[in-house]
Image (cartoon, rainbow, N blue to C red; front, side, top):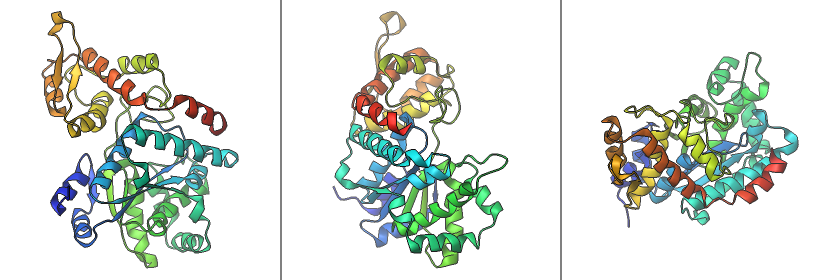
Length: 337
């Protein structure tokens, strides 16, 4: 099915927090039938269940006619604390983990181009441009840009300040029209829009998705085991983590509802499937929902109990992760972590 510009725009905007700018995106869609978008991730902590959200969003870009590139930023990982000695192994783990998530989502891997950061970031022209921007951007600007992404501390490493410069240049050297990232990347994306024109390059469109809350009420973090579900967690661990997650009756502002909204129900609504909540007859019996809004309304009205919701969500997550080759990931993890 061929989509018109408005349909393509609607698909890209779905489940996003901010687009800088929407008008530029509209013009891009008018000019290019197959623009290029990239999403990047530094090879640091283990990819968790939260990765399903941005990778599912890349599917929207693909359906909207975009060519999709995934940057596995190994050098960025080193700049953010990953040991240089295991960098190649960490890259291998990330590529396998992300490939498996994409397969679990039904994404055609032939439509995805994986790029290793060190494959182009050590080039003469790239490093020359790094120094160009370094001569134009202040320490304050770089520190501010990196503050929500890089572990800086009171006495930050110089590498953390180079990080946003390199991420800005990735847009140019990957030859993309759009960068897609989480809202926590916003300061770096605005740094790119400000600094690329200073050395003769075009601004790119920046598309940001909201951050999924963790299971304990914070941003889902790969470094906080209590806040996230690992790709290799077994069924019991998944159930235990979901059952102990923060989910106050009537309050839809939590990580449980976030994942349900941005991943599970996005998939189900696209496939015209319903979300089944199994309950004993004394508690109303089984009930199914066709959309996230139906679930949210029932939850806010306290017609749907948190434990019933959690049990149903745990089953969906277990089903989603059943496609993951946990044994293969565990073997790669021995060398990568």
